[in-house]
Amino acid sequence: MKFHYLKYNFQFFFQGKILMLPLFVFLSPTAFSQNPCEKIYSPSEVDMLAEMPLNFKQFGEFTESKIIPVLSTEKERNGNLAASLRILFTISDLGNIISVEFPGLEASAETHRELANAFMQMGTWKPATVKEKTVCSEFSYKIGCIKWQ
Image: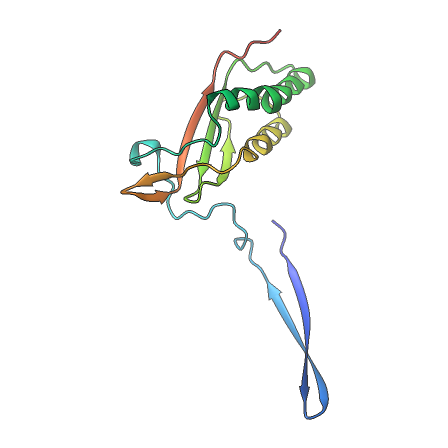
């Protein structure tokens, strides 16, 4: 994460003279942190799991249009053939995807990035709940039996 530096000059009129007052704002690397959660609950700790914004049919279409092309490119580029894909989402208490990981996927870092970017565009989820309060949580999903022709 890059540090951001902003400089503003505010002009104040004081007894007919203009005083220039520089204002420096430094933002720490955590100012735009991707993880706004104090605690991330596992599926066994929540009362209601997070829910995807896509139904089963829409998720299938999403997989065919966004995910399979990335896996196909990985197959052509590096010869890695994925027969299944396990996806570990971290969902915020607002339903935003914080992170996406692919445990066990043997693929290049570029493919991991491309897959994560595709999944990050899925939309807003219904967040998990504990005692009727929305919480940050993990959600695991497996796409099995990817058929290559």
